[in-house]
Length: 117
Image 1 (cartoon, rainbow, N blue to C red):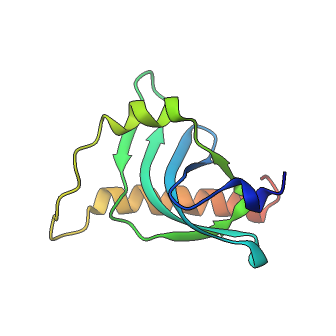
Image 2: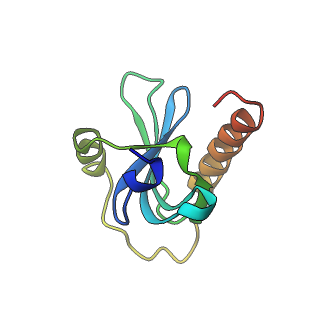
């Protein structure tokens, strides 16, 4: 099956690193460029016995190479979503969440640029 046909708007996908995973909602698949526009939801660090969940719903959307995503399983996402609160207007961005998200994206991009993905 063509990768571009695998995802659809509203679907939850994940971008995986060694021990961290970004879960995001697909906004649009840009078939002509093989990119996926996603809205980040959660960044989960699985390096500890109990996963560390960071709510990243307030960070910027990303446009990322389509082949780096995988479809998230319902069973993994439902459990994680129960750990976050309904989104409320905060007035100020969550600096810690933004920093963690930026670090994760930088590491993934670095790996991708060096052929490790």
